[in-house]
Length: 178
Ligand code: SF4
Image 1 (cartoon, helix red, strand yellow):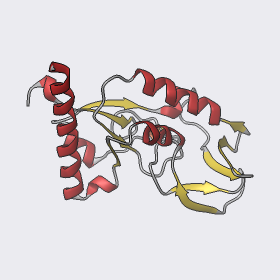
Image 2: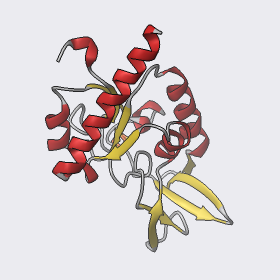
Image 3: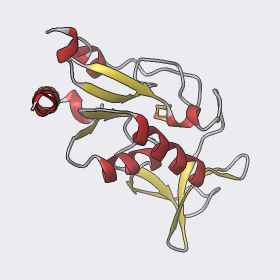
């Protein structure tokens, strides 16, 4: 496949691109390796981009009084505004994109089943939320493929994802030529 034919896919940077997880680790992911030949990845780590550093104290989503907040219990920081502003700025400037591959269950990047707590320090949680960055992606790019690496470990799902981002890139190029 020629260089310019590759679909552009935004990917969570910890999925094999940099050791940027909260604990300083990188995730060696077979899905990314499998797609790398056919996809132009655009890696981003939203938590690093808002200046949290690495390693860092973990963050979590807390819902209280009907309000969703992204907080860092160890420091008492509320990062909701910073993350929403970064997501808007990034998605405004990312340019043409054909899909997203985001880290499963992260409070920033997770597209589903993210832990949601009732309080910053408590242990009780439900798995029902979306990460703050993922939420902005899902609101703005619902027409594109948005997946996490766990879903794509299924061969058919991975092949389907690749087929659809290839189709999105082809459609984008053909509309550019009109
Ligand atoms: S899940 Fe997202 S925010 Fe967390 S380390 Fe990976 S890229 Fe960064």
